[in-house]
Length: 261
Image (cartoon, rainbow, N blue to C red; front, side):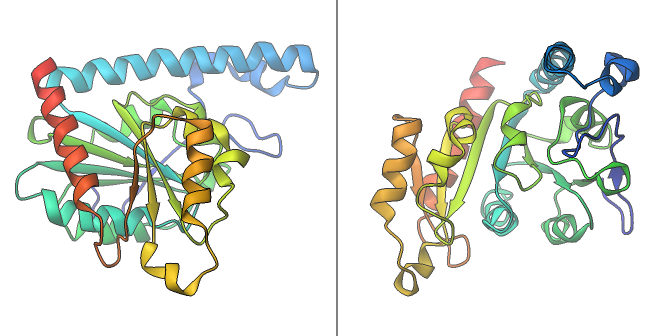
């Protein structure tokens, strides 16, 4: 649980202009030898193998506790934290929640979410390279700070980035991506992996539509081209317009998880 001034930091193993954090077990020598295309492919494969193994271990652990885990992803400024503030306020009377927050610097988002009363753990990556995503091993570490017996829903607010977070399984049950109407309608086409790998999409900040030259249909069509069957919830986390379908989806998934364990 986050206490004032506390934060959980990740460790860096390599930095090739695009920093990443990975478990120690894949070996520093291999990581630092990333130079040629052939060698790089081998190292990346090992990294992903290690992460997938740790993600499976996380998933098994969360399953033992019957916890539904949601990985919430988006670009910076899409409204993830505001969405979580409103979501926690709406569902915490009925659902026991905890949050893991990933940011490069500051505990600003964690401070905001801690007001809800939910256990909140902050992961900062700044002092070790400013990693652009959360990997399975840091989720395992963060979860050690949470009383899992007292949690039904664990939400991971990933680092703001539409690329890397989609590449790393952290042991979640589902993924949600937020796209705000202040971003381009073609973002799903530019960053297809994020939308291909997510289970639902939230089109956020619709309260701003009267002031923007934004084509909602084009944005939804862009999502459908990448992931044809993905539910898209149009809402404003600021005004709470359109939030109920999103909250109902969370409740339904939690009930499904309880039936499975």
